[in-house]
Image 1 (cartoon, rainbow, N blue to C red):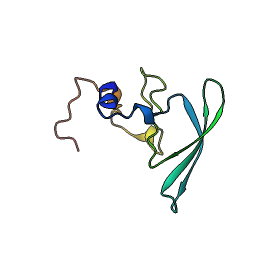
Image 2 (image 1 turned 180 degrees about the horizontal axis):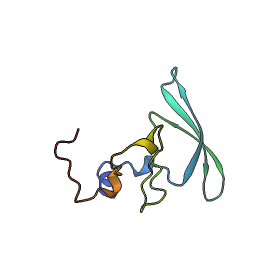
Image 3 (image 1 turned 90 degrees about the vertical axis):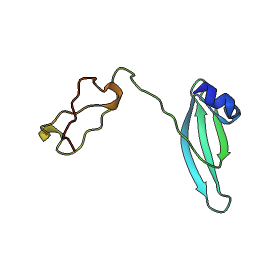
Image 4 (image 1 turned 30 degrees about the vertical axis):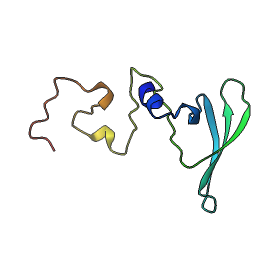
Length: 95
């Protein structure tokens, strides 16, 4: 990831360790206005941007997030998270 950031000179546009409080789109200005706070100090900050790319990251690397859905408890098949994709899974003739 750092190589891509360096090669494209985008580090100056990235804001790490911020929590977004609100993001509002202006069709007139074609810009986002972002209200945020720094996670270290709680300091309020305002940014504007052409686009948002929110990277929350992993909450727990060892366990990928699996959302629950209606009927999940009745599903008879194997549920596999792509983060822990098993080498032994056989998908032949599966749809």
